[in-house]
Image 1 (cartoon, rainbow, N blue to C red):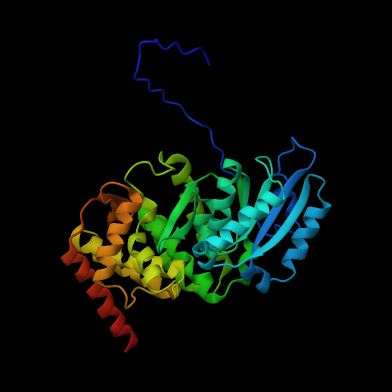
Image 2 (cartoon, rainbow, N blue to C red; image 1 turned 120 degrees about the vertical axis):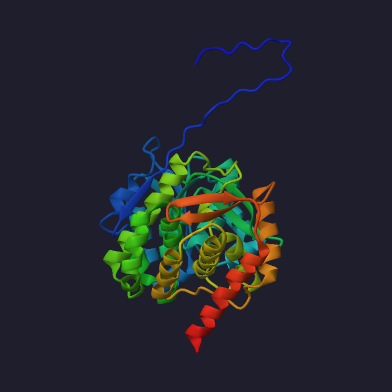
Length: 389
């Protein structure tokens, strides 16, 4: 670049610049076995030996006791890495709600003398990815993070996201940062250890992104939902891969990866989901809360923004076939008033929500018709009562 000449009398200087980012996603079937060379190739070859620290979701360790040994064997055999330490960490929202747990992650990074050319590998569900990613993004203002999502939700959605956060002040993701992961490894074999409940819950995010971006994906999910619920892996992986590619495209080509504008389309259905999670003390899985939130915003979109009743029926039918909830008794006025206000604060400035006019045709709204939203809640409640009689 050439020299920039700035007059000494100029007291108002604005210079636009861009920082290049790279997003690396790898799809594997046995990342700590036959596909290990794919993982190893993600380690920069500039150094003879890179320091690596590993964090594994305790739920994964309990479900797959041999996983740690396989991973440690891969790292020990590699001439490219030096394994500094391997840790278990509690999974679920617990890891995001305790500052002590996050402080222990920082302390371990300090003990191992990790630097900006070191690597942190994190294996687990979305909450563990969030918490460890938050620490990695802050330590030295950024240590290279390689994520191994182990849930359908994280593989379809949050694993490729650029957000890292923990909860604070009773609010979800209040502390956080934006940081592009060094790489993400979506490995199909890691999904085999999920319970049926956790396996199904991830597909609410796949429904969300198909409603926002792809009539074709929405139609395919409608026809495959029952198969996915019964763990047909061909159908499940096809849906996960379609979802993650739509998310990745949005992040890398959507023009606002760090959410500096008011619009956050990928948070469709999340304003109420986040509030429901905190109100029920996280007894709902995140994917289950999102399912309820998506159901609510789909019905509201039909009442206010002209979304067809056929789309509503199909969207709710998909959630039914997936075995996901569309209503919770805590879905009430408190969710409306507190949830919307907390979401506005999280965004900054005025309230901005994504709603739907049709599948693949989203709009941004800045006001909510409370009477219509209450009507949408009532609709879902009555539907739930009919189904459970």
